[in-house]
Image 1: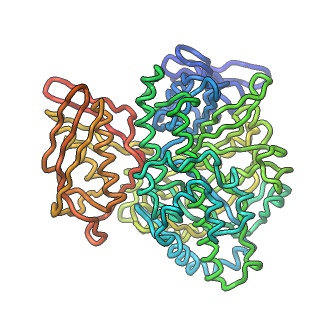
Image 2: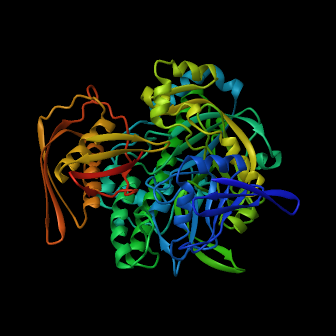
Image 3: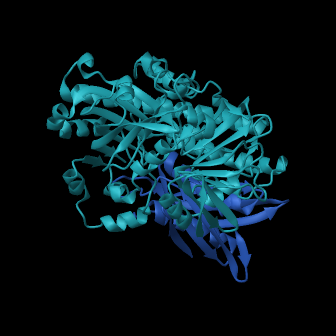
Amino acid sequence: MSFSTFNQGVSEMTSLTYREYKIHQVGEVVWEIPRTGKMRVPGRIYASREMMEEILKEDESIQQVINVATLPGIQKYSLAMPDIHWGYGFPIGGVAATDVESGVISPGGVGYDINCGVRLARTNLTLEEVRPRLDRLVSRLFQNVPTGVGAHGALHKLSKKDIQGILKKGAAWAVENGYGRPEDLEFTEENGRLSTANPEKVSPRAIERGQNQVGTLGSGNHFLEVQVVDQIFDPEVADALGLFLGQVVVMIHCGSRGLGHQVCTDYLRVLNTAVHRYQIDLPDRQLACAPIDSREGQDYLQAMAAAANFAWANRQVIMFNARRAFVETFAIGETELGFRLVYDVCHNIAKIEDHQIDGQTRRVCVHRKGATRAFPPHHPLTPKAYQHVGQPVLVPGDMGRYSFVAVGTPRSMEETFGSTCHGAGRVKSRHRALKEGKGRDLIGEMRRMGVLVQARGMRTVAEEMPWAYKDVAQVVDVMHTAGISKKVARLKPIGVIKG
Amino acid sequence: MYRILSHTADIGLELEAETLESLFREAAEGWRALVLEDSPVQGRQRRRLHLESTNLEDLLVQWLDELNYLLATEGWVPAAVRTIRLNQEAGRWQLNAILTGEPFDPERHYIYFDIKGVTYHQLNIVQEQGGYRTRVIFDI
């Protein structure tokens, strides 16, 4: 890696070298890898200069941006958000849009945890009101929302009909069955349902892995947090989203559990064969893909949509059970509590969307792997209540520092296929975090930071300690500076439940 | 021989063995060490497995997926690979194995990692003088 600087306009721009590739700074926080070799489009990375240096030192993620640029039908750029890190095939933080007629769909561009996502609910309660009973609230949440590896049993055993309903209807199934309100759907990306879902394309094995897991968090970096709005950057937008300083909110981060993992596993195998059938030349096997209009491609898209619906039903049921925990702990009525969904976003998904390319509206398949949709004000898919401010973007951080709320902008449509960052990303391996946490009272340390943590295993707590993560503020700031998503509020955790 | 690889956000195994059978055996051992660490597992029950694929890498992914599946859906934990045979017939690889193990018991067993999937990333079984080697990365 080497740096050189040159003047472009008023500000000083940098060029750097990665292996045989040149990377040019093309904006304050935008870097471009010109098209060479088998790349069909250039690569573009959103990052500060300091981040860029880290990214180049750290791992192979830049090579993965280059690899993705070779996919058939890819449009404009192979993109990476500032939380880019090494993934499987696609980098995490990667965005790629492929033409629906000439392009491919790749399960590696979605990831194993299909429709992993984040949902934020607000309350009328303030920190002062919640603090005295926080202990009780966190215990109640821990009772109501099963966590940990293989967590199950949030709902009574579901029938085959129920599972079909969940796979077809997503969050709407949960609402129809009493787990939430119809208006929740309005504040969920895609209204909590991809209509292209076909349960028949989901293997019995995937259904078996997921059937007891609706309403559960799972393990790893997934969480449910009680947070406080501790900073507002844009009062007008915060007000439109119903957020105010000192307000207690709930953030839920999880996905499609075992069902989604199995769908990905099943279709990677199918698409690995398809690669040979359609004679697609790939630099990495994990990029396995098929033409979007092929049988294999359509089968995956339909199964992926069903798994995405499963994830929405999952987060809807978790939110319902979290609301119950508030009602039980504070013994107050629903009106007084004012528990309302602010928004629900997915950050591992492939979507068929319309975007402007070379002055024309084109239908593309946008792969977002560790990237969040960030649609602007007045977009038809931005909820009615948020038409004037834009679609909310939820960016979770680590359990000690903070998470962010932002909104999408018109620039995201011009530059990133309506996408922005999704989180912090690890800075220390689980192994190293575990080693550093050994013999320490981590729950006590978190309590002294003002965060009450309840988890199934101490191991997860050690792996997820704040110092194992990058500072998410830097990630959000890059996208704010780039004008892709605008910061609205910062949320500080006070209570956490984990696997 | 297996060695556990720990990257920033991932975990995997580096495998080396004299025969293909022992490479697959080591993979299962490594999986057990990662997922269950030193949880004591008794070989009270037997499971017969039959897997097929056109290539060895895919067969290895299937083999490890099968262990994940048994744990995730049937709550069954493996103690050891009792027998394992690999052979190639008409261009297809076949694996026949007998595993010993027992139902998951929360009193004695602790699951350390929820493996979402076995990836094909950098997966390449290489035959060298004196044996085979590969690495396999898990998404967790």
